[in-house]
Image (cartoon, rainbow, N blue to C red; front, top):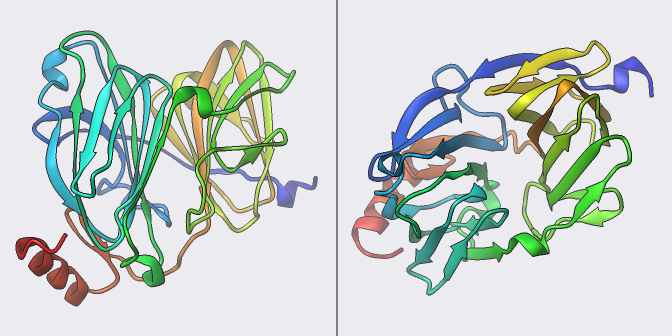
Length: 281
């Protein structure tokens, strides 16, 4: 693979402290003034705390329209409920991929009163043609997510996309996403091939990892944005590392956003507010 085909780190950024829902403390990594979005990814929140007061109030009923929300749990338990009759318990290692489409009202509330709660919530945009589709909910237990041991010190959980000949359980998503959870042992190495024009990034949440032929170092709590290219490589140092890798087809469409509504024009946003207030979700 030539150097021109290999992805390089073109930006490294850190998240900022934030709160959402009824006061859940988190780190907003994408969706900040410094990093508004990475088309098609609109937002990435990382949450993790041993203190119940940081998460116990949860995320009571709230609406969404025009995009998808993805919750991936590392530790702790939450329960999802929505006004379409879906209900699911999210335990460690599970993922919930919810397509809001034309409108849904849901909640995510803790199923614990103490102990560690940790994970990620990702927002993925929908193309204009799908923004008013019927809502859809994929509730995937940890045991349904395939794990691949690469033999190079890398253990990869495949939430969406393909790796090592195995496909992730998330299906029929408009942006053709890849979502991998990669754990590298000390000096472990990882390599991945993806569509050259797809947007991609990695968020390191344990240890430190170097990416690309130039071995750009990315530390715990940092997000690396990659250039275009067909291949991506990573290597951990003496302490090992762990990161999530996301890639997806960019939509290259206008983004109009107002809180939990993401459409293409402000007229569509105004209609979303009217529809929600009228109980049409």
